[in-house]
Each structure stands twice: as structure tokens, then as C-alpha cells.
Image 1 (cartoon, rainbow, N blue to C red):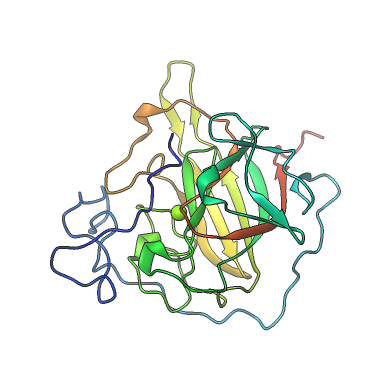
Image 2: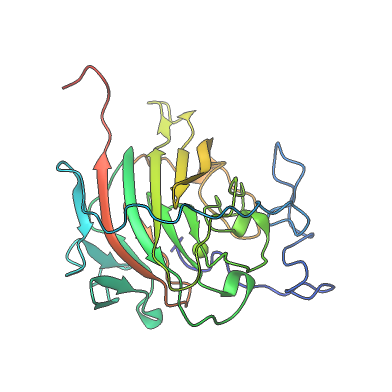
Length: 264
Ligand code: MG
């Protein structure tokens, strides 16, 4: 399954992970001067979010509520069984043995809101610290990571398009604090002949700070390899949440499928 094995911790043969985590032996990303997960790619600058902004404030009236803090009825496990994550005090928490989860419903173009918190007790470093992820159509990862004073490679940071594009900034709050994560996603499209006519695009705003601005995915998310749209023809899919072994929490998850103008 695509959710598994992505964003794993690694060891570099010459560098200690705390100094310059990343890779120099991976392929060059087409159209960019950088390796996949390049250790030398500039890291996003740190931005302190506004002192307060709206959190846990409900959903617009036409939203599909995917998690209201009470149950996982909208979710299933990776292989279609029950979603086995723990629920407590209005949030769900990654439960490592249970694996990644995904929505039962599938979506195309949408606005997605959620809130997350990295584990208050810091454990691990780089990609091994507070790692999870939001898998759009089950294939395109918007990275979730504890990026608060946690050096890691640029394209693996919070709000990164994992292995493809770093975020524009690092607005991480401290471990244990709730953070907002908003996504506007447009699915890729193929014509009747099976040719790609539109790549997937994403806009990501975390804690009120734009991290991706309508950027195109190069293809479904991969770890340490190049990607392309050749393996997929799918314009619809679920929202996945990644089990990367860290006790990341989520709450207030809702989604609004997006239509077109002039079509009431
Ligand atoms: Mg991840």
C-alpha cells in the first residue's frame, strides 16, 4: 500500500543525522537542481504563527465532517477493515500497530481542514519525530511532521510535498500544541485516451501561513525515488492519514468537495 514506508528515517553514510539529515545518492528531481530529499537543499525559514487563531471551531454548513471527535465511522483501515486508532478527549491518535487509515468516501477536488498535534513528549529526530501525513486521493502526501527545532531535509518538513517540494516556511508550533492544517487540492485529470491533461495541484496553509501555493505534484508520493503519473489514472480517492509509528493526534477534520462556478 502506498501509505506504508514513506518518509522513513534513514542513516547517511558520512553525516550524523542531527547535522545534515538527507540524501545525496538519490535521483535528481526533474526540473530542479536537487536530489530527492536533498541534504543540502535550503530549509524553509522559521515563522512564528500569530499568537491566536481559530481552532476547533466547527465546520461550514456544507462540509462533510470526517471526524468530530467522537467516532471513526467515516474511516477504515488500509486493507478495508475497521480503523483502529485510539479516540480520547475529542481527538484521534495514531495507533502504531493499527496502520494507516483512510476515509470510506472518495473525493476529487476539495478543501480540507484538520488540526493536529505532535507528541508532547519528544522522541526521535528528523523524520523519526512526530511523523505522519495526509494522503490526498490516498497517493499525494502533504507531510505532517514535528518540525519544531527538528532539523531534517527540506522536502520532508511539515507542509512539504514529500520528496518533491519543500514548504515555503516553517510555522511549526511546539510539540503538544494544536496546529491548523488547511488544504485546497485539485485532482489530476486524464483524457479518454488516457493522456494526462492536468497534474494534481495543492495549496497548503498551516497555522495561517501559506506553505504551498497551488503547486503541481510531480506524481504520487515516493520515498527516495522519482515519481510520475504513468502508474495511475485515478482522479478520485480517499483521504489517508499515515501511521509512521509516532503518536500524532488529529481532530476537527472536515472536507468540502469543490464544484465549478456558474453551476449552482
Ligand atoms: Mg509522513
